[in-house]
Image (cartoon, rainbow, N blue to C red):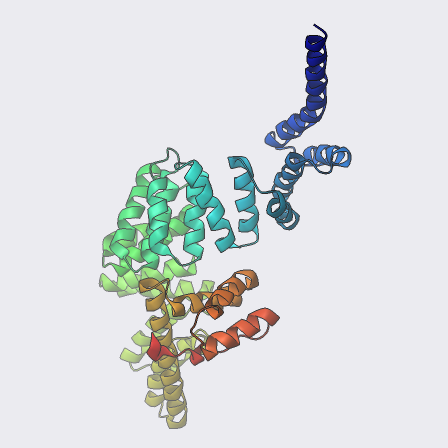
Length: 406
């Protein structure tokens, strides 16, 4: 009897100790789930002052830090204590996403999918990470699984269409975006605005030669919001439909909205050149060719305008500019080809590292260059890029990429 009483007392004491520690944790969890971030942060601070070694308390703090937009400290906690359930894993992955650390977030999302194969947030996160890392085909797989999740269909098909567009599959993109409109006829509950969606849809339809559909989609976009790109594309649709009057109106409006946009200026310059209006063509092209993003087609048209004006030296200068731009465009075409067709190849990863560094994502660029340097291949461009990434210095020119090795 004494043993029974003693054992019962010991259990009771243990329960009291457990309850005293567990009750505040439950309160913190409930407060966080209610979206009350500041009160939850105060409660977890009070708890950790009494129990600084509590793993659950520390992980709750990490989750609260993620909600508060402070991923750095949250990641230090997760790296020390790990994560054991889906809410903790989601917070861990989200912290990496907040820092644009796609390659770190991806394995966390994949771990969630091992435990919960149909978790929609993990499927969305996996798709986003794979997309940012340039693995478009793998992203298509996870996005396709997301289409089976009720309430996520429209966003999933939007992402599938965007991925197909990146892969150059315009017809597959059109098919996917048609599915978007079955779930969201007005495109009103998407990550992009309705005007942006219909504008981009119209542009892909135009590239695929579906002129009437393109015109309708672009006009719908412009009815929602004025856009230089949509006016430019609608002008192209009207021209291909044989209606040059409306085409000119839309090209001029595009130039008003965005004077640096090259496409409508090139179209207006081509019309002026056909009419022998060389000075007008030069005036249309002037803002476009001065941009560092100008194309070889723009500088070629400027060369023709100068020839028509009998400006021989200027024509020669623009001819040289055209040749340089064509060389650069050939390099970029080769780069895009290798990124799409061989995303896991050495040079695809090197170019992605360059792009991450160019965008200021030094962490992701560093992760990729370190992996490349660990391989047996030693390329001067990659070595120079790695050094620049380490020091956040000036990036090497893409012209140094050995295009013949692609």
